[in-house]
Length: 240
Image 1 (cartoon, rainbow, N blue to C red):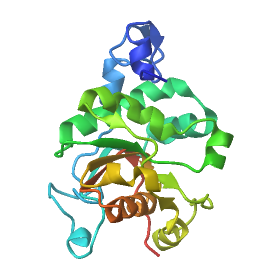
Image 2 (spheres, one colour):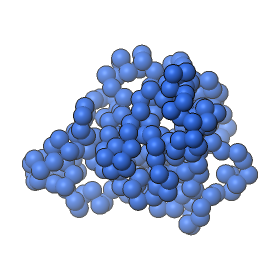
Image 3 (cartoon, one colour):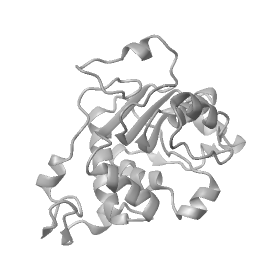
Image 4 (cartoon, helix red, strand yellow):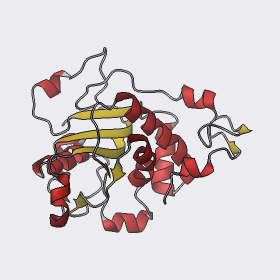
């Protein structure tokens, strides 16, 4: 897919996913009023993206522990309508939801990113999951970032070592254990990572266990910085 879905369809009449009105919209499949009504993340920790009560750079948990992610950008809370739109794209191949999700991700990255990015990395999925699903949703979401940031998407720098079991109903500690050792950097790609600033793209952040393991692998591979951008974050689950 050489262009983003949104850019391919820009200017064509479409039906708004929320109010069902037809029109030619700036973002395909959603009118401007409905786009602006989608809840956005307001205050959150710069490191982990956890919502906070007031503006602050780093939350108390991140001050007191080592973290592998330098900056986390979350566009929206995982609430209506995103809690139905993201699974529709991810699990049911409903590509009509992609343009608005791309736009939310793009706005967050352009508005808050504080590092010049060398490589954009969609969160990789195991080949067997890609075969079942037919695509990697993070690759679709990341596409508009290439032109906007002047950086290339690289699908080869980070790879899945194994397929992890489903993380639904797992707490943070279990998710961390489940993800341990699940990523690797292919030997022939390793030099491209050295001293580079990486933007890791994800659809949903839950406990952050997957992103943390991915970032750890990149940092151990001598990446200079790792920034995570995600469309949405679920309410913070219990740690135990």
